[in-house]
Amino acid sequence: MTFPVTRMRRLRRTPALRRLVRETRVSPDHFVYPLFVVPGSDIRRPIETMPGMFHFSVDRLVQEARSVWELGIPSILLFGLPESKDAQGSGAYAVDGIVQRAVRAVKDACPDLCVMTDICLCEYTDHGHCGVVSGGGVDNDSTLELLARTAVSHVQAGADVVAPSDMMDGRVSRIRSALDDTGFEHTAVMSYAAKYASSFYGPFREAAQSAPRFGDRRSYQMDPSNAREALREVALDIEEGADIVMVKPALAYLDIIRRVRRRFDIPVAAYNVSGEYSMILAAAHRGWVDGDLVMMETLTAIKRAGADIVITYFAKRAAELLG
Ligand code: PBG
Image (cartoon, rainbow, N blue to C red; front, side, top):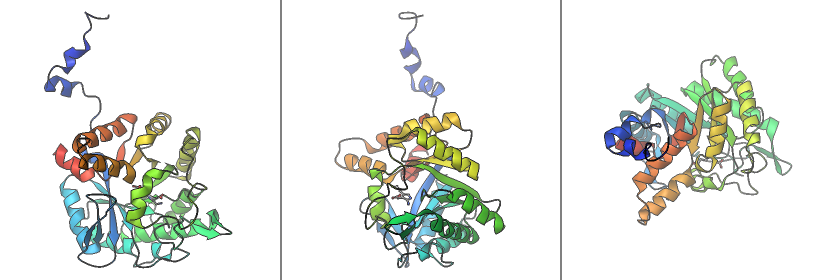
């Protein structure tokens, strides 16, 4: 039946009708809010490349975590900036490392909040790569041990979910068995399964002081041209024991989110990364777009593509608007 019998505009006539037929809903229930923790006390320092985001010392992070929880957001994802860096990234797996201390303090103050931690060495290595550098490259297998130690130390501090983001081969199974061996068989792994070598991470690398000192990450992160390869990555991580798989970035990779959603029945997370966030804020700042509306449209698109979980720096603002 076509026009004039069928008129698509009938169901767009009023806000109530539009609500009734809305297919995709954005809710704070699905948000993970990333936070950056730094040494020191009473610090809440704006991150220049990411307006509205801050470096928090552990004491101020605890307050922030409480307000995130009160907004109805169930989860945070922690990134740490250590006091000092070295070739082995030892700050990543130090028992009293910055993330370990942060997790303890946040879980103490806010036990119901789901605390996830990013497992990677790049914030902790002096060369800025995500693994051990040897012979001019990043060595896969010797990195696995350090990642596993990092994961166990975060979970011992109280982390609910660990999220390896390094893109080394075999890290999910290595971390899974390290957790099982230490009695943490109930702790989940959210794998950055299809993580692309993307230029959209620019603002984050400023925030986390994690830009590589030489070269780039293309020998371990994925080539943006590849989609089938993402499905292989996801399949492997599921076999290795991932509980949640992630696609990252989100916006330029909505097709990947869709394909992963279609093929697998595991929860799919999408990381709405720093560049996606800061571009919108920059345009809004100039009055070129309405920042809140573009934010909601973006989050809707990520959900519509098939993401169950959205990791986003917009989480607090969106939760405020969703009320
Ligand atoms: C660490 C890591 C990165 C991001 C999350 N974890 C940076 C990178 O891989 O270079 C990026 C997050 C963002 O841009 O918001 N490896």
